[in-house]
Image (cartoon, rainbow, N blue to C red; front, top):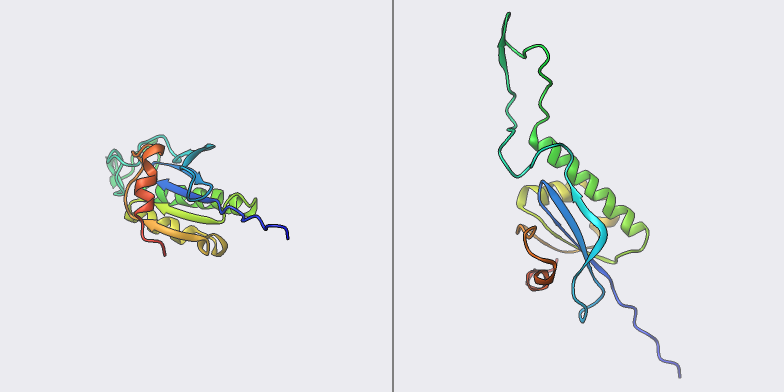
Length: 156
């Protein structure tokens, strides 16, 4: 009688904040988390979204007619809008990965606002693959140390 080989379930973990993200993978319980080439992403815009350089408040200057935008000053895109657009871009990457069969399970680790943005952007197919989530910011944790953090997550 031939032995059936067990298929190893690949898990992706999206580690993100409002400014950048990376996707790492794990080929099974005995394997370590590894970085995936080309799966490091920076947010849209020429700023660091984690800093308070630009705020969500509109910046107005006094012009000749009173309170209003001075001629030649471009409108400022609110930071929240840029972070939401970044979450949409990441959800598209996750959708393409699922369609290509690159992963079966997904773990998401992001600060609370980014986690909310990501969950709102995920397609139903991708959302059904979410095996765990954390509102911890793990963006500064090395790939080698991620295992300890991700294993402690409570899977949904």
